[in-house]
Amino acid sequence: MSSFHAYLYAAGIAEQFLPDEYHLENNQLRVPASFVLSRTKNGETLSVYSDNVWDLSPYLPNCNCRLNFNSWLESARKNDFLYCQIRANMKKISFALLYIKSGKSIIKSIEHRHAILRQFAAIAYKNGCTLQQLFSDVAYMSKVNDAYMNVSYQKAIHIKAFLVDCFSIRQ
Image 1 (tube, one colour):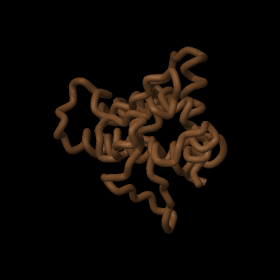
Image 2 (spheres, helix red, strand yellow):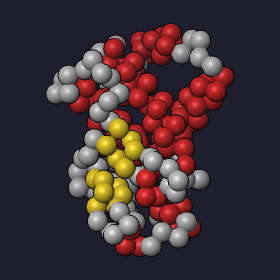
Image 3 (cartoon, one colour):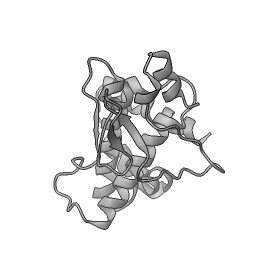
């Protein structure tokens, strides 16, 4: 059981309202487009993996939690190949944070992590690379450093938390 599902069970979410359960196979993250990420209080599907906005609000009382994978860069053409690649990277990372990351569930801080991810996505797009390239190719590290040179302490804490979570997924 994922930490996400464990959190939802502990919160008393009835089984018919739960999102689908995910099982990692051969250490490969392959998520079907129809994978249900959230359901309404009536048990109807609210968000699936292929959606460009994931509504997780039903699982966070008093919170309007929507992860938007479309609006992270206003100047991009929505059918641009690189834009689509980065959006696919963003979905995989967000999904992994929710379903693969071990330990305490990330659901309460997923909006903060998503905000940081959107910033990294914009940096990647502006430098003509994917998120995978941005995080793994030394040539792009100076671009990341330049982008975050003068950030506030609070923002630095959010960036660190995001990177620590991403690193824990890779373990």
